[in-house]
Image (cartoon, rainbow over all chains, first blue to last red):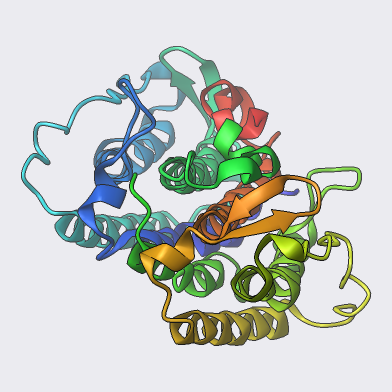
Length: 174
Length: 174
């Protein structure tokens, strides 16, 4: 589908309410379980989304606009912030994410991005040349991917409880 | 995780608002695109969820409670109702799903299910012996699976728009 900036903001602004609908005030056992081993719980996903909001999307957009390809992005540390969020309730984290996202969308609006600016190139430390438009499309897909992760982690808590129906539920095998 | 009836209803009652948050008033092109070939769009998923609400969950729960294993369920037709929904807007469908789900949860409450009733067995036309508890757990996982499908279908609309970032976005390969 053709990239449109209004579509990007339209989807990004919905993610806090989607996460609220899925997770807010759910019993802890649903929110804190993961998919085994070092995988993430829904709580961890929200922590990660806050961290990305603080250090990734808008910062990288600014780097592209100000420095283009001459200034590679800081590598994104996917494991940072777990320390910082320790002891916080999911409600606090969902509130924090909502506020951060609102702030990001305001910053995005202030950039008054044109089609030409969306073509502007930056340098990803591992992936190489990327454009500002690609960064924004990635932001959308990243949100959707982590919502998909949350529902998958939740679904897997009922892996055995569904009995024979497991065969008809592809999310349990994903 | 141990099956608890309150958890089932707690999750089931959230699905209409999650779908509203993801889809209501989105531009048509986001709602009507699919993953190619005969796959479903987000619109189709909502149609399917309404159909399941009308013909599957509560009806099957009643069959188990009234007839046990002596009366196999009617096979569920996953392709019915696409005719019936033709010409309806997504807004109408989301409203219809919300109402149907509310009705289902009221019916479920009226059943006053006990732990013993949840163990009661029924007969699935293809899968064989199943319990009422397994039916309810399946209802939850089915909801979550289709929410996961909606975000995946949406994410894939930006398959090319993310450029090199595709390598970091597992939802695009799923």
